[in-house]
Image 1 (spheres, helix red, strand yellow):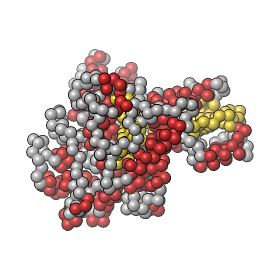
Image 2 (cartoon, helix red, strand yellow):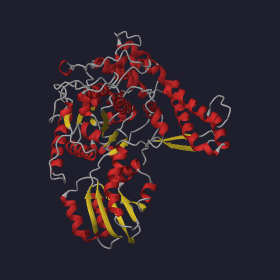
Image 3 (cartoon, rainbow, N blue to C red):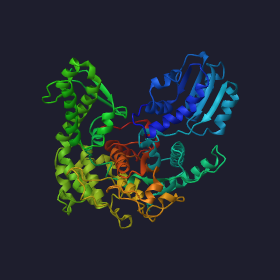
Image 4 (cartoon, rainbow, N blue to C red):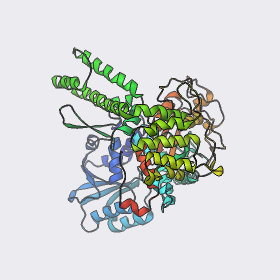
Length: 592
């Protein structure tokens, strides 16, 4: 298993693949070839290793879209998405001269009749098995999933979009796929928004598709609602969390360091290029990812010292150089030490960036976001908080983030004030970074009709927090309110009936010590699934684990079309002004 944890989405997905594809393969003792498209390649790489496949008599893994040598004596397993491109590539393998002895075909989701009939027409006699296994989502972490579709942001929020309806339909199908994989039939609710309809539309689509799915399910008995609830909310619901500089390890690393596809690239002290995967195979990463950077920097050296002591080595000041020497001299624990070296290096990289720019920014950002300073004194003039940021030589993206937090704190500003801010940041030709937030339903220019009250926040003043980490993502309030049955039905209408265990009150506070009640017992083993249209942040992902840990009776799972970072979101916001054809001519994505 790629995911070392014994629970979670990756484990569930791998088990489902084993129970369908692998079980069918076991019936034949012959070694087989596995052929994947880009989505299923990525899917399998998240939840299993090549050694797992080898142990199941799969000897070769091939790319469906690439030219392959025929192996007529071997059977092939095709695991692919039900798209015209994938089906055409499959047909090409058998239409004229069969490349393989036979085909075991597995689709991630429902295959349209037209595509299925084409397959039957051209290569029906070569197909041994054809199944739809309903895994059309990406298990990113134990409690995090995506639809692997960053482009959904443009499709849904761009005023020039031509495929918004189709994108929402696809997201609904993928959410149904998630529920089916979890064997859940949840009650569906959405965040009501007077200016945006996407959450309501998606909730309707998901609820209708769930009903249809469970009516058409293989079992003869119609499935009733399970002890699960699905909440759907739009990205504009909380514009602050994706913009703030976060100081917990995972969020900070992905914001400040150039980490692509979960790969951290760095130079060792001898100058050689190294890379490390930041995933759930690395148990130290799992232990540290949600901790504040101060705790990470404190804990890694302690762990190294423990290993050093166990090897009877002097444990002076821990540096990368010291570790390199220790590793050369003691091959027996090289792997164990490598893990810690990687995280010491990554944490140090984060702190270099923090000391250079971020530390001074954080106080202003937190004051603007929370609306009060460290002492709890209300910020009466947000411009006085913002001005030092504008006058300092910070990068353009950092200044834009601060300006946005200022505007969000006021629930919009005047045209005149906005023009001055844009001049200060020197983005006169790139005003879209700020103006396009209106496409998400976030007030940028103050008008009498766009006034909307800010959500009432939970009081966390008694909790232990770091001065530069006082903000809590709004989604955590929602998760806790949902678990405690405190979501207001006026703000969170029910799209469908609520499962019995989610009715009534009497749930426990996620911030207090858990006490079992009869309601909690009924809800034990239940799930809360939260879906954010338009991307989720690493800080919001962390909230799912925190609430699950605090409330033992309910597992919280969070997902979206994709995972975003502050700068990637700003680039996406800016690109909302582009017409569809422009995306093919210029790529302005940067990590400035």
